[in-house]
Length: 237
Image (cartoon, rainbow, N blue to C red; front, side, top):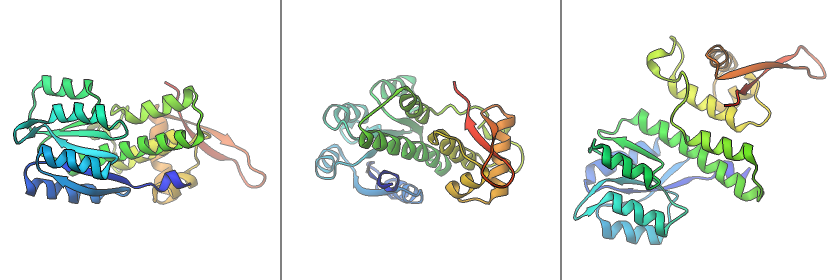
């Protein structure tokens, strides 16, 4: 479908040109994202927002002569279709609280780690595509809202790497959970393998791990021919 192939256009707002370039390279390593502009001050940011109307802004809290949180409020007021991920070296609880209350999709502390950014971008891509699907359908029900809200949550039970068994990668696990969450009828190991781009045996291993950890449940689907297949579904909250 068209909405599944949409590319997320990103504007980076960062006063350090070298850091902005590193962020650009990080973002474009993740499938589905393209950096359309880099702004190093408030004036450039507002100008590029008006011209480019990006889907997503990677926004530093500290800008020359400006506060990134004020820029966040400006974006929320004037560019309702644009989302924001805040990036900063500041660890003050007030800044984090204000960013969350002002509608930031996520808040990442410097120095930026690629895996952490990738995890956020994968969640955002799922969120963005789900919104596009809902816009195209013109209808919405409670399960749509639940699926959308679960896609924005960073809390995924049992996905902390310190508790994962050997051979289970956190990012692959996140992708599988998101794929299952987006599938209304559940997925088999074959389907998840094609969706994520892994082998069937790898997909089955991750799925069974999620069943054992209580995040998924599995039942049998009886086809026309052949033996029944295990279908994996997300447990209702």
